[in-house]
Length: 445
Image 1 (cartoon, rainbow, N blue to C red):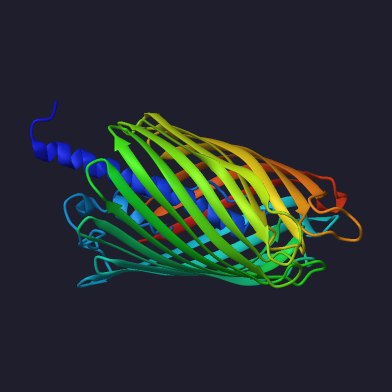
Image 2: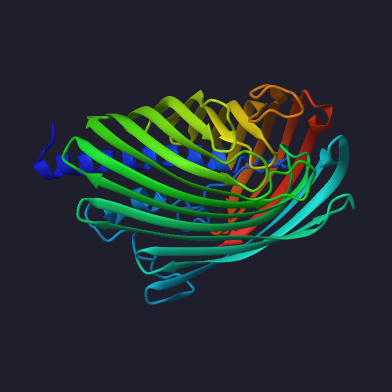
């Protein structure tokens, strides 16, 4: 079937890298969503894939560095070297300036619970990224946001990402540090909410033999938010998730064990937790990939006499690309976490999302997306005579968006989109219905 042993080894290497990214990314997505739980009311516009000549993305996902490096299949030095012939390159250091402008008109944007506003939101985001040799990447982007409605405050947000990845023998190593300072209208808080998030990730993958691999991850997440009634204040979280995977052809199965500690400033939400999970992954010739993980989370509240809670958790991700111009995605998940926004509450969230991307007329992309999420806010500690674990609030959030995006002048992109989102809540102050139209233009090297 294979012409030589080298071809077989290359195929095995590609599969290992795929499973490494898949398992680590699913773990981080679960942990980060549990700790941060932020969902902005302003629906982001569709993204445009960069032209082939651009070769640079300001999105920073630490595990991407391992899989995306062409030399990673044959070298142990990590990401590829910066591209040649870039306009701003000095030896191993390449600079990638970029800027974007976005204007959004929306109604139903909440400035306070029960108070919906119409506003125009303009955001200018200049930034610069750096390739620092073969291993490190750095990107910084401030965002200047102006609201036409004075019920919202104008802001200057900041986003900083640093990532590094390398290989050492059979080990693949990556580390990432991100800093995010934002003030956006949030679904969960029904108001513009100041947030400061500092996230550190470390991932390590080891190929034990041709069939077995070990994936290790550690996450530190520091989140500072508050300034409203019943706020839980600052939160700090540390967690790890570790997997043993068995690979057989295009299939992979794994068993994972994780644990962590969450420290919440106010209330009785300090907790430890354990994760017991399994996963199955299937990847066929870049056309179809399916990943399923599931298990249980056991949580212990340190300042409460309530018994441990045991909650089912799962995640499903399906990607299908029947043609080079057409792709479909479907995902579903369920997770449980202590609320980082509200005192003495635990959030249980179940959601499903779907998307379609279709290239039209060579350089035009049509993007469709939709989703449904149900979130229960349960009491983690008896409050005012109410029993623990009773539902304090239940939200049902749905959204749909359609957009057209295109690339121009090799390094530019633009998009126009329409979205509709709605949140139904047992607490009427958190319910809203919003229609939004957004236009975005960006340019970068």
